[in-house]
Picture (cartoon, rainbow, N blue to C red):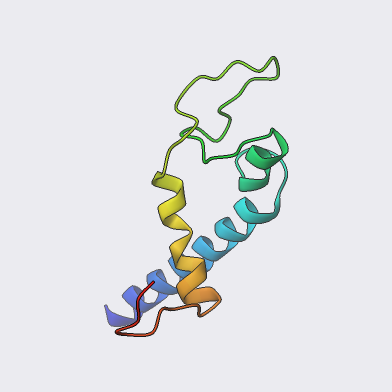
Length: 87
């Protein structure tokens, strides 16, 4: 059972990193660069928040996806605030 759990965890981590890499670097939806290429100054609620004609469908200032970016900063890049320091 422990081997199955370890295997499942390893698969989940690998899948998460592949998805994370794809959403960071591709220029088509769903991705961070798609929003930037469409002129987004904030994070959209929907990956495809603005149609080709410029019509917005959901919130264009939505933090839920922004919270996810903490993982690559702290775990992939190793950027962490020193304990007791002031941000």
